[in-house]
Length: 274
Length: 304
Image (cartoon, rainbow over all chains, first blue to last red; front, side, top):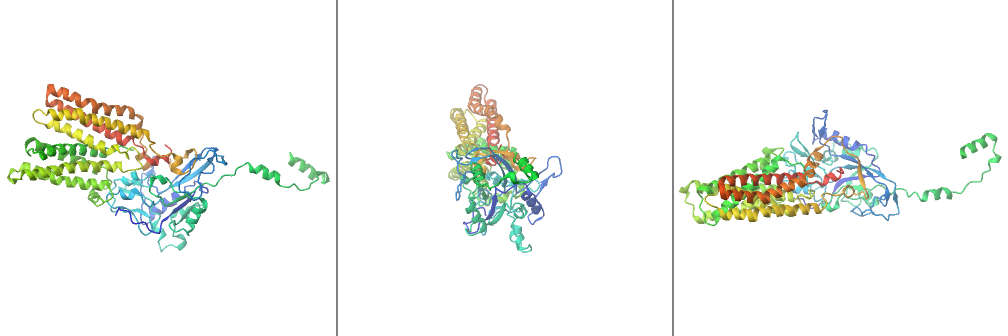
């Protein structure tokens, strides 16, 4: 059914740390690898080895330059706020210019239009954990859901004729044939900087919820009204820079008399003091 | 957005078909007979609408499963469109049968009720078609209050062009209605629509989309080649030529019916056929531009 289920207590999702993501694309590759071989696979490509490879990926990692200037280095996000604050030119923190790597995937929204626009019921949101899935046996490939998603979470496969999207590795997270530690999405397992976290964002006591509360995690495009579940942790404030020289000078100097040193060390002190 | 020909044919042809059905049924509802030209118009309108609906199947990855699209009418405008279009066949088939087989002896009241139902069904189907696109929030140019009215008016105008090409005798009032009211209304509505979509930002900034305050520029795209999103939603060509194409659409809506009318006074029905061709051309260009000119919010992540 493409009517949305009543909101449930469990909201499984990802928390992605933009401070530590290094843009290595390991999440995207691990996702592709798992979903080509997992129970929902294959994740199809059209002409993968050709001159213009083209295919479906559930993770896309963008890299952005946030240009230097005043008031944009603190990422503009107050803790606990859902919406990104507008750029604040009066911010005390000068922004030295940031490179932010930005993994983009399905946000498993609470009230997504990709589900309600589906004419067949193929696109659905699970009541028990909030995961948004596509039933490949019902999908007619009209692509309306991809148009309805402002986050670009859905990609259509010409090869299969049906819509493809992130499953939050639903075939891993409940998979009892895997070790308990491995029952996490493939992208989370693969991240070398632990910038990706998986858990229940509907439970305020969960690790991911606490991380979000602590770091001021935010949802994307809250004005869309889709209520994304996934959260992004903003880059940490960069060091101001104005405090730094003071801190160096404030350190008390130890008593030191170069004239009492042997000649070799005296020469070394002179050479190093230049 | 990439303008898919299957969807352009679907919306233009079904719009014209339902417009023609609406006009033909209106005549019957007000006491006209279901024979001769009225019957021919019902058949032509039905064929046009059906060809349009078939064209929409060309957009599906799995067209054989299209019947599944009838199930989710409670939430999906596409599903509602399917249900409305099928329901509209009932009064249409009844009227066509009554016209073909006088032995049925359908009473005048039954015919008028069926014709009224056909009017409602035709209008409802076009409203559903327009809402398939108007309900999509990430595409600002489609999520606009002028869209549904535009689909209805252009459907009625092109339907009227078909009606005039088939009309018997001297259909003065219909010509005047089209030249003085319908066609200029199409042009004015489109003009207001373009003003409306130009006034608001077509998509969020990259900063708003990523939640990173400040000026955010793309340093590196996630992929070196195109993907589904950039192919489907990164169509640029139409915006490059939007100004000229808008003038073509507005010009065709404003001038073509008046020229056809003037020629019709001299030449008769061949001018009505020329007017029909011009109206359909205007509708096709308008619809191509409607789809192709629109920006999708996801392109904010690609910062293009």
